[in-house]
Image (cartoon, rainbow, N blue to C red; front, side, top):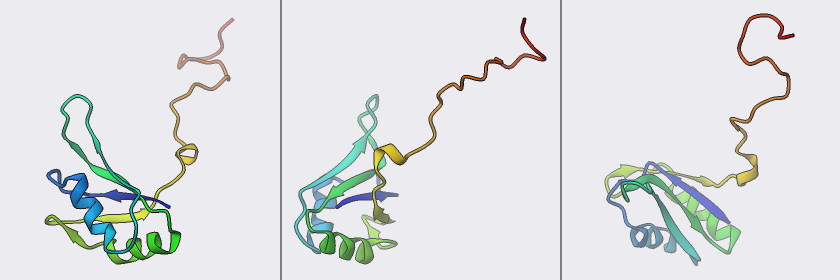
Length: 102
């Protein structure tokens, strides 16, 4: 199970995150997302737990709980393909002008 963790303290380390989740079962990985320009935490991360029951127990036990002085949000991570949003262009023409182009 891939678990999303938000509102992390910017000083929380991956080992801290892993330790918190290991109280609920086996953790394959714990990753805090870092800003590529500043190398500082973005305040969220992901934990991978191979057992779904243990993962759900971790979500239930850690969501809205304090970790390193911050109340964290813990939930099942969404698939990357389901993020929506896009910024892509549509094929309706236009371009932001008034009226039709000829």
